[in-house]
Image 1 (cartoon, rainbow, N blue to C red):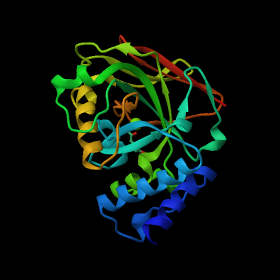
Image 2: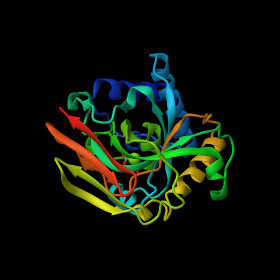
Image 3: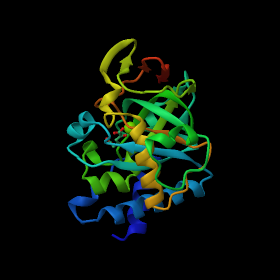
Length: 253
Ligand code: OOG
Ligand code: MG
């Protein structure tokens, strides 16, 4: 299959909530080819009046890498239609086999078009918040290679942001948890994210510049999950809490 066909197939799998076979079962892709497919599949979404609103990193914690058997950082694009209001509702029937993750989000106060260092973060990042990411692999059994998941826009499906907070001096040693109906199902320290969640900003700036992805003022960045992802159940409330940043929740119907 050519890249165009794979991009369309993955886009169709996402819109119809019907899983497809992993590409890597029949065809070898390089990482760069997988990012080209991701870019092409995003064109399909943008053509349906969806808009780019930010980036996400994946596999920034050891717990996530171990869970999925994939050991490299990846990045994907977030769109307006993936953005779910804090306290809002999502319908499980629009997904294949969704999972939730506790995350930290950032908001850009300036266009970011080159790799920045930790010292520069206060110049480029306006605020941060607690977040939930909902991921939903378009591949059967939620199984993929690194190239498969990159082509599938890193399983990006939905995200919910808590209230924006001023940047603290440090985002280390904060307890992060994911709860279903008020019961904690996963928790870890924020250090699980690259030993320092601020390093997600540096890495996202590097990757966006490397792949020529504009990362403009106002964009959101999801830093990557601190814990393994957990399958979502119908008729439940999913919430995440990041110590000092507060909570965020979504109702699954
Ligand atoms: C890929 C997305 C990983 C994260 O936060 O690590 C991710 C997947 O596990 O399906 O979003
Ligand atoms: Mg994530």
